[in-house]
Image (cartoon, rainbow, N blue to C red; front, top):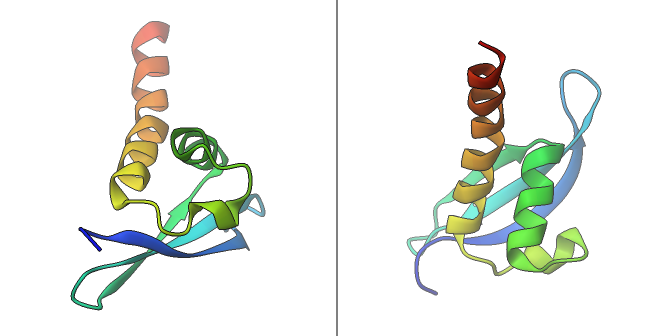
Length: 84
Protein backbone atom coordinates (compact mmCIF):
# COMPACT_ATOMS: atom_id res chain seq x y z
CA UNK A 1 0.00 0.00 0.00
CA UNK A 2 1.48 3.35 -1.03
CA UNK A 3 0.03 6.29 0.92
CA UNK A 4 -3.46 6.33 2.37
CA UNK A 5 -6.29 4.49 0.68
CA UNK A 6 -10.04 4.40 1.12
CA UNK A 7 -10.76 1.47 3.42
CA UNK A 8 -14.44 2.01 4.21
CA UNK A 9 -17.44 3.96 2.91
CA UNK A 10 -20.71 4.58 4.70
CA UNK A 11 -23.83 6.53 3.79
CA UNK A 12 -24.82 8.99 6.53
CA UNK A 13 -27.11 11.93 7.18
CA UNK A 14 -25.53 15.38 7.43
CA UNK A 15 -26.63 17.86 10.07
CA UNK A 16 -29.04 19.44 7.57
CA UNK A 17 -30.63 16.08 6.73
CA UNK A 18 -28.97 15.71 3.33
CA UNK A 19 -27.14 12.50 2.53
CA UNK A 20 -23.37 12.42 2.68
CA UNK A 21 -20.75 9.75 2.32
CA UNK A 22 -18.32 9.07 5.15
CA UNK A 23 -15.03 7.81 3.76
CA UNK A 24 -12.39 6.25 6.00
CA UNK A 25 -8.79 6.70 4.90
CA UNK A 26 -6.35 4.05 6.12
CA UNK A 27 -2.70 5.08 6.39
CA UNK A 28 0.33 2.85 6.03
CA UNK A 29 1.05 3.15 9.77
CA UNK A 30 -2.44 1.91 10.68
CA UNK A 31 -3.92 5.32 11.43
CA UNK A 32 -7.33 6.23 10.12
CA UNK A 33 -9.15 9.44 9.25
CA UNK A 34 -12.87 9.85 8.65
CA UNK A 35 -13.80 12.32 5.91
CA UNK A 36 -17.39 13.41 5.27
CA UNK A 37 -18.21 14.23 1.64
CA UNK A 38 -21.26 16.13 0.42
CA UNK A 39 -23.18 15.13 -2.70
CA UNK A 40 -21.05 17.27 -5.02
CA UNK A 41 -17.77 15.87 -3.67
CA UNK A 42 -19.14 12.32 -3.92
CA UNK A 43 -19.99 12.81 -7.60
CA UNK A 44 -16.48 14.14 -8.30
CA UNK A 45 -14.91 11.26 -6.34
CA UNK A 46 -17.00 8.59 -8.07
CA UNK A 47 -16.22 10.06 -11.51
CA UNK A 48 -12.48 10.35 -10.85
CA UNK A 49 -12.33 6.74 -9.64
CA UNK A 50 -14.57 5.39 -12.40
CA UNK A 51 -16.79 3.95 -9.67
CA UNK A 52 -20.45 3.12 -10.18
CA UNK A 53 -21.10 2.16 -6.55
CA UNK A 54 -19.65 3.49 -3.28
CA UNK A 55 -18.10 0.08 -2.49
CA UNK A 56 -16.02 0.41 -5.68
CA UNK A 57 -14.16 3.28 -3.96
CA UNK A 58 -12.48 0.92 -1.49
CA UNK A 59 -8.78 0.66 -2.25
CA UNK A 60 -8.64 3.95 -4.16
CA UNK A 61 -5.89 6.43 -3.23
CA UNK A 62 -6.40 9.33 -0.86
CA UNK A 63 -5.56 11.86 -3.57
CA UNK A 64 -8.98 11.21 -5.14
CA UNK A 65 -10.63 12.31 -1.88
CA UNK A 66 -8.38 15.37 -1.68
CA UNK A 67 -9.24 16.37 -5.25
CA UNK A 68 -12.98 15.85 -4.65
CA UNK A 69 -12.87 18.07 -1.55
CA UNK A 70 -10.97 20.73 -3.46
CA UNK A 71 -13.47 20.66 -6.33
CA UNK A 72 -16.40 20.89 -3.90
CA UNK A 73 -14.81 23.87 -2.16
CA UNK A 74 -13.89 25.61 -5.40
CA UNK A 75 -17.45 25.52 -6.66
CA UNK A 76 -18.29 28.20 -4.07
CA UNK A 77 -15.23 30.30 -4.86
CA UNK A 78 -15.93 30.19 -8.58
CA UNK A 79 -19.64 31.01 -8.18
CA UNK A 80 -18.91 33.95 -5.85
CA UNK A 81 -16.36 35.48 -8.23
CA UNK A 82 -18.83 35.38 -11.15
CA UNK A 83 -21.57 37.01 -9.10
CA UNK A 84 -19.50 40.10 -8.26
